[in-house]
Image 1 (cartoon, rainbow, N blue to C red):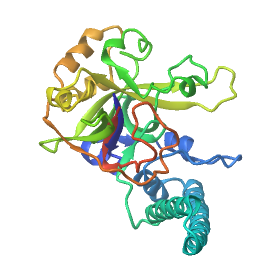
Image 2: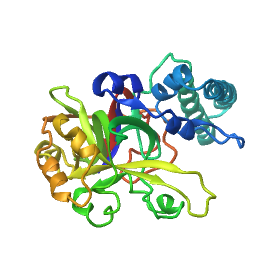
Image 3: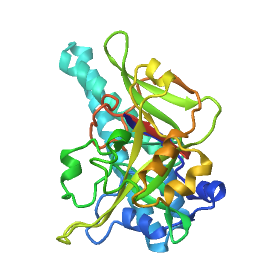
Length: 339
C-alpha cells in the first residue's frame, strides 16, 4: 500500500492548475494552537510558509511564534549534543570504550538532524513536500458547486468511530478498492477527494531480504490525481475537536510496480473524470468503478531511495514505513507515499 507521497502542498498551485478555492477555515482549524497551545499539526513547510503569508493575522503571528520557539529548542539541542560529542571524544583520547564511541555516533547524528531541521525552518533547505500517515495535506473536494481545497490529515478516521480508533488501527491511510463496498461503504459514493501528487513511495524486500524504499515517478512527468475517501468526523460526546481526514484508494499494482516487488498502486484518475469523482452520485458505485477502470496508466519509473536523516514529520513508525525516521517530502506539487 502507499505509505508516503510527494504532493502539491501550496494552494496557489491548486488555484492555477484546477481553479480551486481555498477553505481557510479548515486550515485555521488544523493549525491554530488554541488556548491550550497545542502542538502544531505536522505538515509540509510549503503549507506553513503559505499560511504565514496569506492566513489570518492571528494565525500568521502564532505560526511565526511557534517557529521561533522551535528554532530555539533546536539550537539548544545542537549545543547540548556538541558538548556530548566533545566530552566523548576526550574520553576516547584517554581510553577507547564502546560507550564513548556510541556517544560520538549518536550525538553527531542528532546534531546533523537538528541542523537539517533548523535549515528547513529558516528556509535554507526544503523538506520536499513529502507526506506520511498523520501528516496534513491539501485535498481537493467538491463543495457548493465548485472545487475547494481543504487541509486534511493523511490517515482517515471514519465517521462513527471513536477518537482512539485510528490510534489502534493505523492502516486507515489507504483504502483498498476491493473493500470500498465493505469497510468503506459509508464514504464510498458519498464523500470523495483528490490529492495531487508527483510521486509515491513503497516498501519492498530487497534481494538481501532487507527492506528498501522505492520511489515511483510517472515517466511522462504528469501529475497524479489520487482518488481519496474523505471523512468529516465529529465527536458525539463533544469532547474531541472535529477532524477532516482522508485515505488514498489503492488498486492491484501496475505491471512495472509489481515487477519492482510491490502489490498495490494508488488509483490515478484522468483529469476529465475529476468533477465526476469529486461529486459522486450516491448509490451508483458502478459509475465510480468505471472511473477506476479508465484510470491513467503512466509508466512508473522507480529508483531505490537512500537512507535519509530523521524527519520531524514522522511522529511514529507506521506499517511498511521506512525504518527509523525519514525526511518527509511535500512538493509544491503533491507527491504521496503509499505503503
